[in-house]
Image 1 (spheres, each protein chain N blue to C red):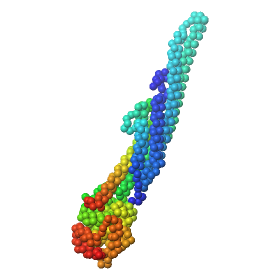
Image 2 (tube, chains in turn red, purple; image 1 turned 180 degrees about the horizontal axis):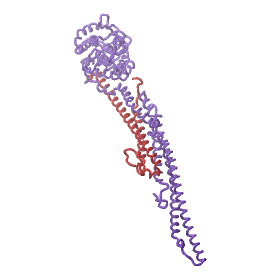
Image 3 (tube, helix red, strand yellow; image 1 turned 90 degrees about the vertical axis):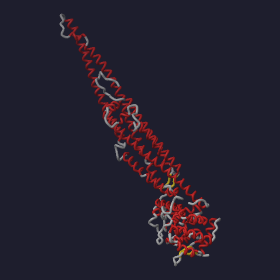
Image 4 (cartoon, helix red, strand yellow; image 1 turned 30 degrees about the vertical axis):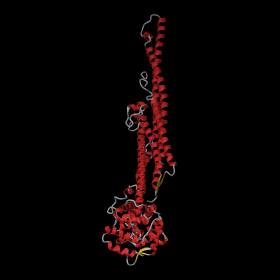
Amino acid sequence: MSGGYQVDPAAIDGLVQILDDAASLVREANSELGGFGGGDVPGGLAMVIDEHASDERIDLLGNETLAGTAAEFASSWRYGLDKLDDEANEVIERLRETRRTYDDVEEGEGNVFSHIGQALDGGGSW
Amino acid sequence: MTDFPALGFDPAPGDAAGVKELAERYRRISTKLGSAADTLDTVASRTGLWSGDAADAFLGNVNRLPEYLGTAVESTSSASSALGGWATTLRELQRRAEELELRARQAAAEAAAARDDPALDLAGQEFFDPGSLGAAQQLLDAAQARLGAAVDELEAIQEAAHRLKDQHTEAAENAADELGQAGDLAPEHERGGLGGVIDDVGGALDSLPDLVSGTSGAAGASGPNGSWGLTGPEFTGETGGPAFGTDRHSGQPTENDPGFELGLGGIEGEYNVAEASASGETNVGGVDLAGSAEASLGMQGTATASITEDGLEVGAEGSIGARASVEGSADYGILGANAQGEAFAGAEASAGLTAGADGLEAKAEAFAGGRAEGSAGADVGGVGAGVSGEAWAGVGAEASATFGRGEDGKWHIGGEFGAALGVGGEFGGEITIDPGEVIDTAGQAADAVTDFAGGARDRVGDVVGSLNPF
């Protein structure tokens, strides 16, 4: 394979941790925003998220135009942060999968050489 | 919320405290996203975490995330400022609204009092003396003036309240504009902006699996496919086809050697080869080869894979050696075999094997040396001799080109071959090579080969005969 590769499993773990930490922060931010799956946020923020006009939202911000803009803003960032969170989690999972693959490879190689070594030592067939 | 009965309407609607909380939330969101960006920044500053093409591509994408998050930080921070400013303005407007409401209430009370002033009842009454008329007129005028002033005050307050409402609307729309500008950076507002960026990130990350799996494939060379684990006893000659080989004339990888031609593919090919080896069982040859192992060369024994190319599992074994060779395979999967050799006995010998014009198979045979008569079997498959000779060359100068097929089409091992064996002895140190035994072993190997090749026995016999330089 051109290019080759070299992996430090511990480094992958570190990378996963970094991404996990970042994703957690993004999730918390999204939760503050009134985030997905998190239910309504106290303080009237959640009602600002609805893209559709609502009396409650207008009551909060005091102006229909401003309420509409705020709703659009929140909705947009909900999408953005949700997307970032999803992507981060996807990357994390793939990195973990990669790590598991390398672990399997390491174990597999060990078994192979063990078999071969036994054969050369006059041990069982291989 | 304050009621405005005197004014009749709320000149500054909104929940200033709620808006302030919203602004503070956006501030916290911005701070968290900033922390996330800072956290991801540490990825870029890390070196040596992961190297290789896939890693470069992956980290290149990940390292863009802080920039995207930076945009989110800017956007939410601006939103916080816009909403915070609006909260402050709204609070002031509402303070003024409350004042107006108070004034309006007072004015209304004054107006009510003025309206109820008894002096107003003097109007229309008759007086019989000028003094009484003058006094009543003064009282009436005062009451009417008082009532008029109260009404004027009420009207002034109403006008002020409406002006305040206009200011409220203007300020709110300014805040909306400011918030809108902050929102322009948000995903759904500008697909070419962060929205596009996020999508790009998603796309880039979507490619991660391929990149990573590609890397895994490389690892596969290491066996990500579990190849190694599979390698071994269970494998049968039938399942393991000739995973590698080279054209006897051109020396180029054969079509059925994708692994060698392609980095990753090569890996698999090698993997398969390895499996073939495992099947050593296939050929009892494996057992015979055990002796070979002694020949040591251990790994070379593996070379027997060449036979596989002839359609015999034996050849598969050779593959094993090939497996490691993957590294060497940089150009040819065959080289991989060398790698394996290293694992067992010292790689140099392997290198020689690679050079074989007939391909791996030939190498294997060359190696097997006496045993390799099996090679003879290979001969059945048409294994080239020159290759073998080179294989030994790898082991030592003396071994070079000692093993080859003569013009008569039979295999021949010259004195150099013997030298090669000697060299082999040096390898193992404990290796003892008895020419006679070697021949016997070769014969057994040939028998094994025959079992698989069928009809090869006769030819093997010829080869064995030609191989015996002693």
